[in-house]
Image (tube, rainbow, N blue to C red; front, top):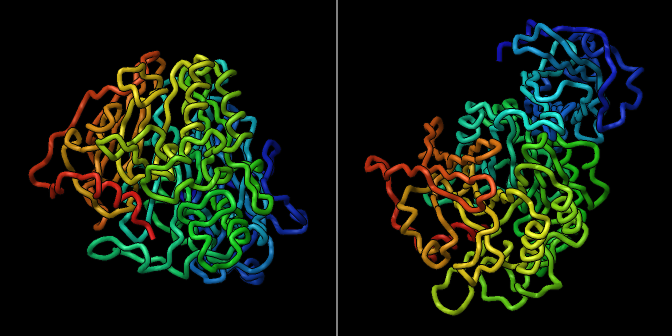
Length: 559
């Protein structure tokens, strides 16, 4: 970014924005731009508090959310980031140019200790379909610069949308190189589909050869634990770069709380542990504190409204789902099972209210592309070539009736181009979607793109995707790759192009990135079509051909 700390412009306050946290007693505090280091130090703020970077999120055609969190000592065990137990006013400014010469909006909000000194500013009144730059200031301390943008006007398509999506960043398993490479792509929008952080203490979830770095603190169970863990992740410079590059749409999966949790049920309910609902409340509160979310997502006890709809003009509507908070517990336990409960029509992965909200959204959509940003594999994946149907009970395969109702819903609503985006499984996949997966000759009614992990699982290895046994058992599955990376899409009126990006190494920093495969989805032609596949590189470490057993192990062997 061209802006630098010496060029930070201090102007008067302006209306047009609101903080998610009430600005209690803000009038009694000094002007945050005018305060000196000495006066701040007298109240306990002695060093740069912008150690966790900046972020923006949930854009609409008039604005977006701005986020930061003050932390002098990010890894403090009490989760307070070395901050004194008092509020601090924080100035924010938005610029209309990258060099920071034209201030278009400014204001002051309060970083309150009750919310971990996090800042959420909801900015409105900006021009549609525009880039903006922003940063924060407390006295002489100035944050890094972030880039945000507004969506096109609701009646406009705007230009092509560069959208990337990611998931599963286990800090201990590798460096966040994919985040850095993603930032260098200059996307318009980033979707994070869950497992933003992991709850385990060190030496609990290990990869062959050992982890390359370690979590601080115990397994996350208290608010202090979750705040500390979020801070450890947020302090990573590669993750900070990705947040500063573009606005994000975020949803959680399981590890933001507890592996494979379901509504009010922990992974191992039979094991003595602290009260799970208390843990859930702490995890939700810390998640809100550390994400660029609007005030509609402020948690209320053990509940948090995370499913929501973001419109990108007429080009795309993003239906961001929550498949954890309202689901019935897995019918036959976790992992791959031949499970009669999986087809029980009374069981749901979304809950009734969210399902009705989604179906209603389909009925009223006028978007060119309706995109479901969600966590777990949507298409059927049977891992048995015989008559038994053995599928992942933690995914939509464990909630077949939910999947059928939602698929039928977009068919009945005549949704123009339904596309499901998925994370969770630590590998790239692409698939056609069916209403009846037992009839491979039946019509394709949608498309699914699945992003591999940022780092979970370590380096992985390249292989020939056509040789994966899942693709033979499930002919609607079209692609597989077990390397780390992200998916970068270009969304136009007549075409969605998806580049499956991979980095060969995450266990050492600084790897290059390349496109392993490209798939396209054509307007009104559901299903994925491969247009490019990078040949196997003999100079790279090629793994053994993937088996059913190894695929299942890589997905499910999480303590």
